[in-house]
Amino acid sequence: MKDFPCIKMIKRNIKDGLIEVDISNNIMENPCSVYFLDKMNQAVIDDITQVNKLPLDLTRITLEIIPSSMTKYLYSLNGLETIIYNLFRGQNEQFQEDLKKGNVYLKTYYKRDDYYTIPVLCLEVIFLRNLHSKTVDHLRKILRSELLIFTGNVGDIDFGHIESEVELEEYLSVPLIVGAPEFIREGVFKKKNFTDEQLIEMNHVHTISLIELNMNDVINNNYLTLYDEIRSNIRHQDDFTQDDEYTIVQTLFPKDDFEDLPF
Image 1 (cartoon, rainbow, N blue to C red):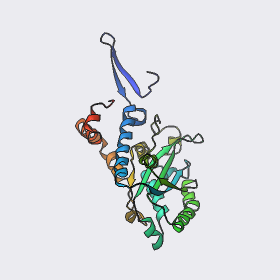
Image 2: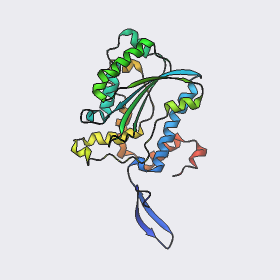
Image 3: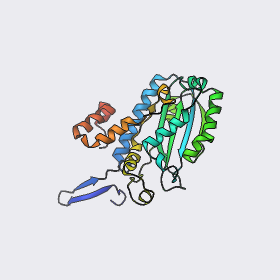
Image 4: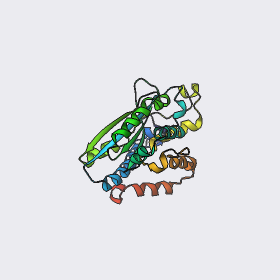
């Protein structure tokens, strides 16, 4: 049991060889929850790979939010939307038209970094095409000036040429930090005055799948709301019944796979 800190023993029936356990609420310490999230993310990626013809080129913008007192606010859904807004605001008409072409996707995830106690929050905006060179130059300027003040780190723009579905899946895959501790108002979070609402949202970042961006709605939008679905889930998470959860699982997994689920 010591190898599984997320599982707490409630009672033991030695005679029948049975043990009743309680699994903690932290989804990243629960193997079944991680499996569920990975399958959910893969279902979204499968839909994308089925409608895009290969080979294709792509342009990826990567942003990392370094945890500090200056960037504390950004560790929230509103904060992440603020970053995306500032990345694409103030574009002239020529740049706007280039940004609006083709399919665009947003990845939101954490990554571990040995320099920081708090995981680094990452955003990736993936255009399934090559952006114009002038658009790229303009975006690099924003990353190195305006967004550096927000995130504490210089973002990056790179390019890819995709020949296979496997390569495309690698770009679109959402990383999961298996075993990541739950964010609670103790230690550094209490000392730095993180709000309860922030911590709840930080715990739900793990559940954010790939989001398709409508660039018409994103560019220069002061009221940008990219994570409303997650906000809704947070508000209504206590309203779900076991039947609701069972229905959701059934919609994500084919009937044949559903019988073999490890939970």
